[in-house]
Amino acid sequence: MFLDELLPIAREIVKNPIAFAGGFASGMLRLDLNEEPVRSWLGKHSAGASGLDKPKPPQSIDID
Image: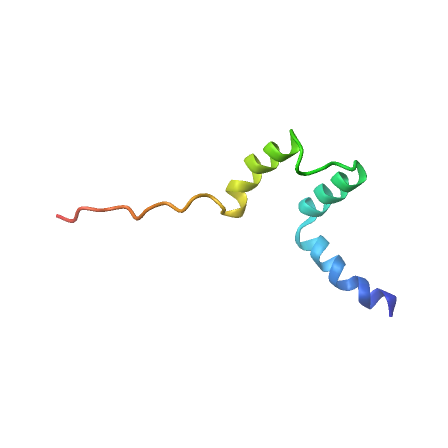
């Protein structure tokens, strides 16, 4: 019964082990994610990975 409650958490850990490890380490070290240098590092590394970059305008093409 107790294992049934932990199964969804275990599935998420298996799907994203690096994110889990990073969150676990920041929690153990009591890092504040809104302070420097953590905030700038997260912004630099997560912007490209999460697809939150500014949308690019449509490109024009010439057809001959």
